Image (tube, rainbow, N blue to C red; front, top):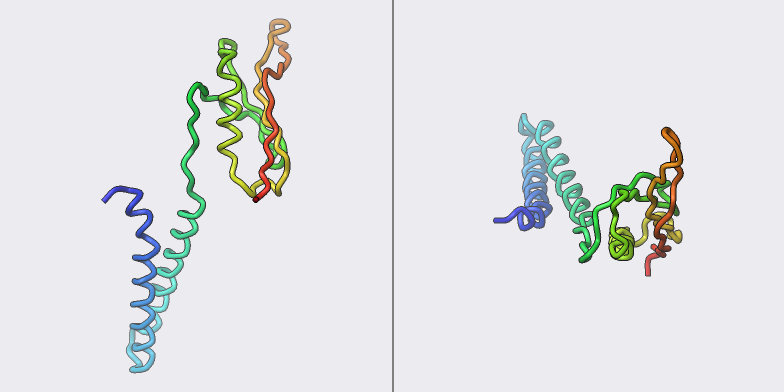
Length: 147
């Protein structure tokens, strides 16, 4: 069984375990068994694990990889409408568009309150020994509204 198959099956497994423990808990309360209060915690915990693993699967999405795009670290993200990624000095010009497209495709729909997000690629241009200025080499605007 691969990791992704296991990941898809965990909510079902913990859900069935929670339902089984819930039945045992009800029986323990009906017949006044001594472990009735201990099994409540296990029941709640297994149902909580089922819900949290289901939520993880819903939030998990694989990254989009576009041919010709280079990895660039994000150096600024205000969480709403601006993302800035830093490129190195030897960044090829033909990789600007695919890199911007890859960054925009990896944004999730419905995130950032439905704003139009500006994604900028910038490099630092050296002015003197200890001073540099940012130069934007590419920019794209992505609408992340849920449609």
